Length: 88
Image (cartoon, rainbow, N blue to C red):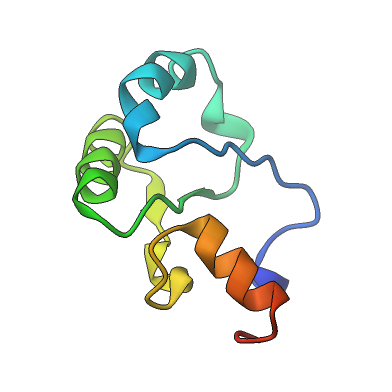
């Protein structure tokens, strides 16, 4: 999804926006000092907006990358559209 802009070695955490309250405690156990970039690609809805604000409030080094979804409601819809050839 991030194309050539991503490093060779990435870790991916996928969760629905409803999982924000459950993921925040899990994030506290991760040492992010070794990560060059940390991206969030949550849902393009009110819950995703709220979750993004909450996570970035706790971890301001995260970057909101929902703009990559190009109008899709979530990462799953984006990937399905891409697989169908609707996105390059």
